[in-house]
Length: 196
Image (cartoon, rainbow, N blue to C red; front, side):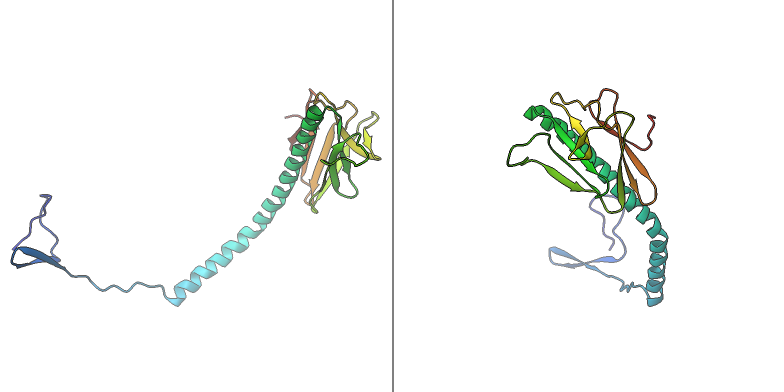
């Protein structure tokens, strides 16, 4: 007896057969026993391919990680500059972002503080693989505690005697430039010193 598909599209597969006992219909389905597995040789070949692929990708990954440290530090410095501008405007007092190139540190604080100091002052350290430099021009630079500094005025602009450029350089010699824009409203991150 051939069973009809309830959807009307041909008969059921040959592996299904009906047993009729009274009013109920039961189906017995026969399955083939299949054992699927990898051999030890196949697993060893896959592990060998993974080792080769990892050894080829490792140098590229180390360059990627170094580049990420440089970009991350440049963004962190730009964010601190933006915070300095915001504080100068909101508090109505000049802020300075000082840079200690020898120690590899920089920070932000109010230009004039009371007896207790600036409670919102921030001190940050540059990543150990990076060097920071302040590029000064012929003008008399702004200093804070004998360190080069960027001075943010109460209207949010950068003081005209502040450094025009800061550089971050990694151990491979790759440099990011933080350059003062033409309106003196802030610094922008560039891959080169010149405007594109």
